[in-house]
Amino acid sequence: DKIQAAPNNTENSRSQKSDDMSRYGNRNENHRRLKLYPTEDFSNVLQIVKAIRKIAKLGQFKEVVQVDNEGKKNENVTKRQKYLVVVNPFSGKKTGNSVYDTVVSKMLRECGVEHDVVVTKYAGHASQLMRKVDEQDEENVMDIANYDAIIALGGDGILSELLQGLRTRDDYEATLQRIKFGIVGCGTCNGLAASLLHASKEKYDVLESTFLLCKGQSSKCDMATYQTMNKSYTGFLTLSWAMIANIDIDSECLRQLGALRNDVWGAWSIVKMKSYKAKLSFLPVDKNYVEGEFEYPDINDDVPSNWTTIEDDIILFWASQVTHSAYNVLQSPRSRLNDGVFRLWIIRKPCNRFEMAGMLIGMENGSHASYKKAEFYDCVAFRLDPVSKGSYNDLDGEVVESGRIQAKVVPGAMNFFC
Image 1 (tube, helix red, strand yellow):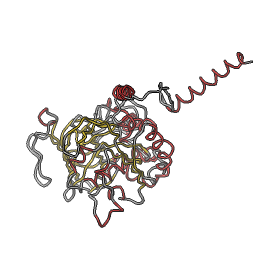
Image 2: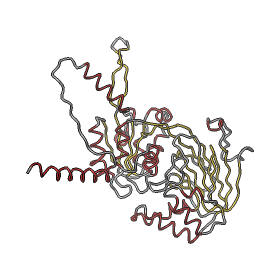
Image 3: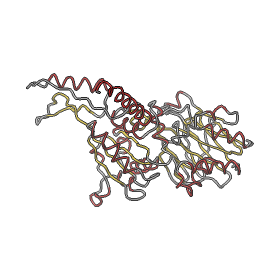
Image 4: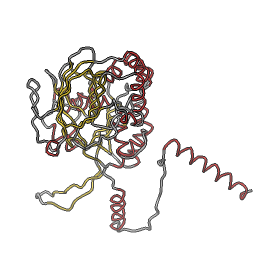
């Protein structure tokens, strides 16, 4: 009986493994326990543990120099890093809390990452948490000096909120260089989460995003500073105007449809096929410019003579620093996280509806870049001057001040788990 049962057990095991592979990819829960011989000297065991950590390239450990009471430095001690997890429970389909409970908290605990969790209660709460600690408002801020990493569970908007809050600190730049950032996509589009996974050659999934947090390795990523006539902003994804901005913002009334709202409004936008007159100026890529050595004008001044200017009727304008603006939109296949450039994509009038539909559909796999009407320009800074009204300046999925807007890349400004 036992011999006959073995093939069935094997078959069931293979079936279960196949199900796990289709659901989780190459990763699923797997524990290994090694039995040690009784010993009083653990030095050899500790050496093995250090070797395993080194081979696995685990980044959630840091070397800390011990200092005695006399101020003398002793040998380095390995300590675990501490994460702050910020959950937006209202983002997307409101899965933030359940993703934290069922995936993130369990995986962080299993790999030994100490962390605290904060659940946001209202719009702007995440931004408020990042501000400098005020003795009169200690309940609404976190002392981020106690943390080595900040993890966002939500859509791209929650990370944008965190960054806007950090910008108010006098130690803003030092904090960006010291702290690692991570994101687990629980929103509608999750462009940054998709871009980080794409760069890591991982499939898009909350499990894979959490794996990057557990592994602890980080990479430098670009940011950008944006200026309008009265305000300044920090960006890390894209700026869109005209068709894409209209689709993103106007489709908010269909939020209950999830990501499908973009498809529905995209079809309607193709039917209307609106164009807007604008003047676009940009500084093309050059080795010296990428390293930050270029003339950047004040928002009220004219652009320098070495900038390229295009003035035309624009159907679509999209400036990207990442490959994905959503988990299913590969709008900038050639973008890299730390290449120091914007990748501008514009479509000018005239363009027929058939071509436009083909390009929007092609964004799923990047094939839109092969269309003749799709113009791409690499630059380190740009200015957009809308002449026609009726569209939005859509920065990382949020509407910012309308009218003239300009931006420049800040190379390698942040550290992301990747």
